[in-house]
Length: 409
Image (cartoon, rainbow, N blue to C red; front, side, top):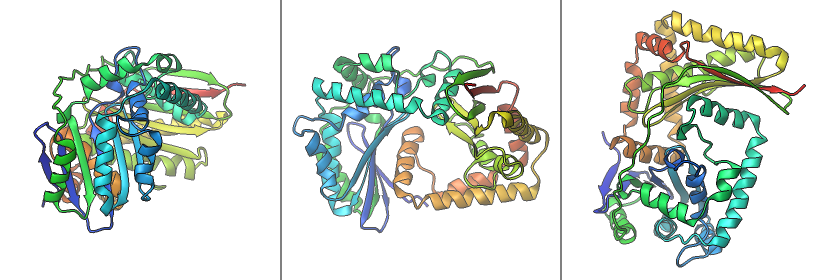
């Protein structure tokens, strides 16, 4: 049973509503434009724009933008990924029109004055410096740069000090004209609202926005050959990432890899890597795996941090677990338990309603529909042990890429 409603405005902007009986409303505006869409030498531009949207519009200054929702106790935030820009808010349901008004203003009437550009440039340069001081974060970006060498997907979302220092107002207007396509925008709401009234509200604020249907061309990454790289850093602990490119979001093995990732190193303490490396041997405080599907590829990685003298054993144990999955079919009980755990975690995640509505908006952008919980569970239940074995041999093969940050002696 479909538990959401969608309406498309004449300009292409889609309105998504999931009814939920609560005095709290969560909403988001997601644009299919991210760091991979930036021109060469303009790295960090999508993220720069996301910051500047909160600075000044034709009718509001920075304080008026920030106070518009905060004065009624609402929470307003935004983030940028490799493929999306998202603005989101949580609020009392009676303040929805106030929120829609603000979203329309900052997304379509921001003025990007030079003074604000310079201030926010300084903030982002500080953010880049701070990020580089966190090796567990920086290593993931450097790893993705290895996976997607000389491709926009390999660039840091924040950009570099050099690229951010040169970004200007012309760059912003050109990027938005090329990538803020109205047919690739979704405004999504979860809360206790009448859908007809919600559509009228959105028509009032978004209906007059001119259609922008510029054609976007996302370059595919070139072929990958696995490599291993060690880099000495002024750090006290060794950091290690191993992984590979993985399936895109529409691939028929996506659900199987999501399940496999959860079994191997996903949420909780009972995953295989945690039990084997942390609980059994006490080697690493943090060990985890992650799978991020993208529109035309994906990223799978395993990360751990440990003392230098324990690193070789930890790496050996990681490879041992991957070999098991390549060589041995999961037993019926193991597969059933993995599915039940994953299904339970997804059900609990529905309680995070802001995360849920953002996920639904992205699904609508990517596929034109949103799976219900029952449909998601059915897809998980349909995964077979043979599929898990096939996926393991495709993803955990000899093309694995490894990056190590070693402490400076």
